[in-house]
Amino acid sequence: MHESALVYKILDTISPSIKPEHTLRIISLEVGEFSCVNTSTLVQLFDIAKKRTFAENSELKLSIVKENFDINIKSIEVS
Image 1 (cartoon, helix red, strand yellow):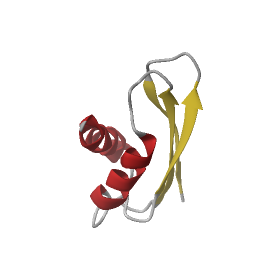
Image 2 (cartoon, helix red, strand yellow):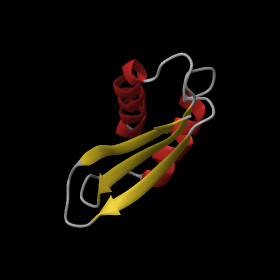
Image 3 (cartoon, one colour):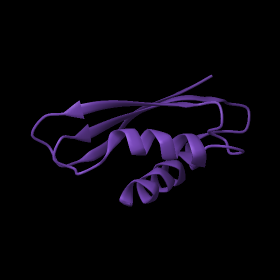
Image 4 (cartoon, one colour):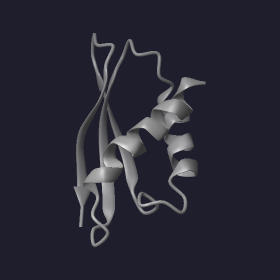
């Protein structure tokens, strides 16, 4: 199940950008339709992995990109 590895890579990638005084609200991902990612599993694993981390109160928003193999962090929203 490579979705769990993706979740931890996403959190590791974003972590240096989040300052202690900020709260991460939304992570927006673009998921290619040919990336072989099970999006419901990705969201479920994200909800588990974010507990007791800087991302605890955040939401993962996904958009599917047609005819694409990539997975990209489109944006992050902090407050």
